[in-house]
Image 1: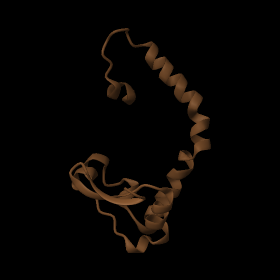
Image 2: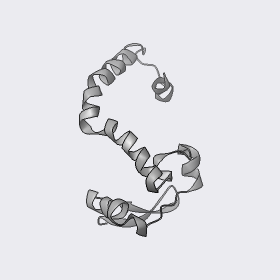
Image 3: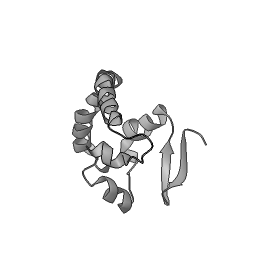
Length: 107
């Protein structure tokens, strides 16, 4: 399809940015030319406070707060802890039974 293409996601028309260069073009270099819109269903699912529902200086403040912990080195440093927690959870499951993974993730 290319780096930038139109499609439908969950029944809503959208534009997909399929490369870092395309994302930078739309979200950074020429952000003033684009106005993001989102279906109400997405806002209801994620909540109106989500980062990508905002723009301008408020968006940049939120982005700076969350981007550090999501960097590869930061995530890598958490890997052993996440693995240990997952191993402990799996050890509590009975063999051959159905596991509600959503309920398990909320614990």
